[in-house]
Image 1 (cartoon, rainbow, N blue to C red):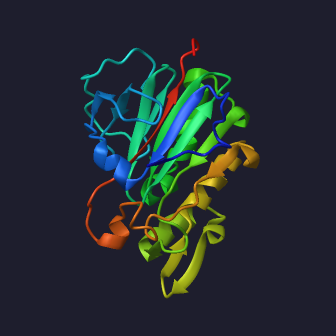
Image 2: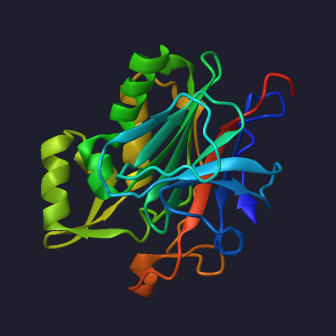
Length: 243
């Protein structure tokens, strides 16, 4: 099963997207760091690119034709493309998958945002990259924030809170103190706030407000299980102008 957000991409949208659940991902074999021909997707077969994720802030730009089997050595936590038919995908277990769509410039992006990448600014860095390389206007972007560890369950300690306090003056808006040096952290809310700070209108930001920790039937969760049993795959693709 996959999750799509109608408010993010309606029937007239120039992009298609999905947030995968554990059942869907178990059927979809992803080759890390390689382009592959993916079938069994909710919108047919496409070439899909998934890279090695390193909890950083760098984005891979794909502004040319990509062939199945092509390899992408190195590590990135965001992918940006203007190529129709090319799915840019990220893998998550508790981290946040974020999908961006610029219909005016026909550009899409997929972001893997854990607490390290989010606090370090992977969201604003990716948006600014879209501005610089493709002329994207943040006010024209649509942003979809996918399932992740929610503010109901995602407990962090002082080392995380210390970095959050340094990087974000509004850090109290995203945390609830639950003990000495411990807090529940709403990572999705931080990412929404970052997008709005860049000029994205709140009504163009939508979330799939499902907590991966709360729903073992739907999602893998490192925080819940203590080990990496698997990851969910989320992606976005530009439709061909011929469609």
